[in-house]
Image (cartoon, rainbow, N blue to C red; front, side):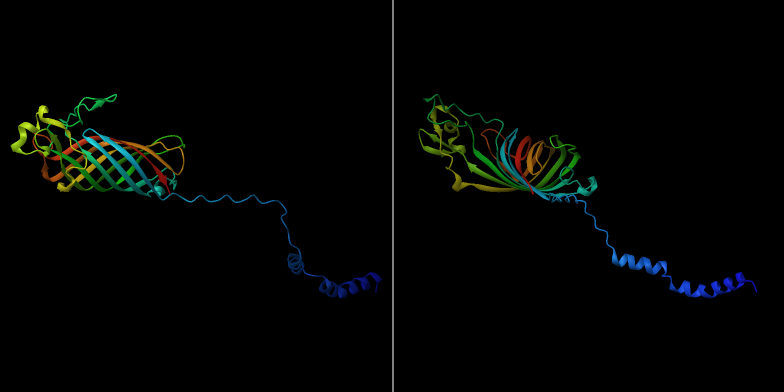
Length: 277
């Protein structure tokens, strides 16, 4: 038999032993994975700090209206930011709780001269024919709903605002110092002297009549446009213009010769400052 055939037979006989001696690729890879670790030595950038979203605000402001003045305090809770891409800093609606304290004046009120440059024109200025001061305290609940947002921090957002609730009227008698009788409030019996400047020696002090104050319950509603022009994230700086209506369950006398009223309306403007949280 040729030698080449012997050689082939011997090679095929040793082939199983040679194959068994070789490590499998899977086992080799597993061991490589167990023994080698890749380490990333590149510097990791710091994770940006997540800004806490704003939830609420409070503000206080001064109000001027066509028939008086007031001081107003607002507390608001934000909602609806998810409708604007969850950007609650610039896009949101507000649930509002309001407290307002002020005075309603009669359009016929005309104050007399007091003093000018230290020269006394009259002992103390007064309002001729005034019967009562009419103050009011109002509690309200409402909303501010966004019309246009703040795409940039220095621009203005516009909201439609509305609120309503309870009103408490405070009616304080108005006293004049009459030459004949001293501090005097109006009655039908003293009308001729009460409205005669020749008998009047000025108005009594502001505190006169508080112990005779009467209260009158009522309701109110207001609506307007609110302009937020704050340029800082946590600052409230805003103005508002609108219309206000109040109804009281008893007619209020304010001036001699004028019919008492239970329904009052006015146009108003408010400037407000405060904080967001």
